[in-house]
Image (cartoon, rainbow, N blue to C red; front, top):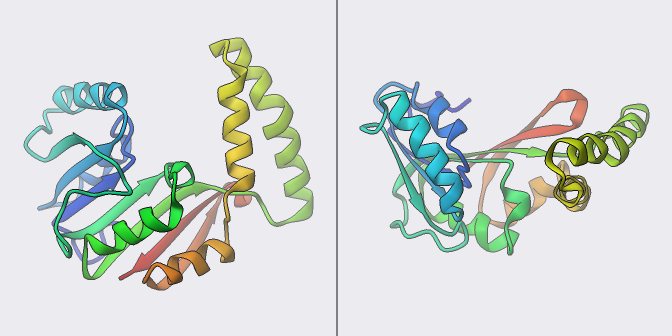
Length: 191
């Protein structure tokens, strides 16, 4: 999806430890800026980039997704992987993503979602509300972090509700591709 239209300038918003930025680096002729508010996450990402010798292709910067320090129409592609549900102001963050994109530029969002099929939804809730926090508490000793993941996913306006929000923020030609039986969704929106 990201390779379509051969984007040259790419912004990976909420890049975290730069996993998506590293994948995007496979797009020939592209340069990627990975942006995140957490310096600790960026430091881990920088080590990965150095190890793969991609410092000439990927730059990681500290920044706020809701106040992007780039000119309007600067990027061909923007991506957000599992970060949009953490925006303090969803509308403001999405409007910023729209602003920095060139005309016909694309925004690709990968985000957790709640499955729509009632049987899958039941199994999903059993897994996410009981099993994931339990396993998380064993390995990380921080059950609250795993509860946050489940609660933020359930609160997030996924599916067609999120598509309506993207339209409100100026995007057009939006489609959804569900993953993992609906537990994650990819939204592709064009400016």
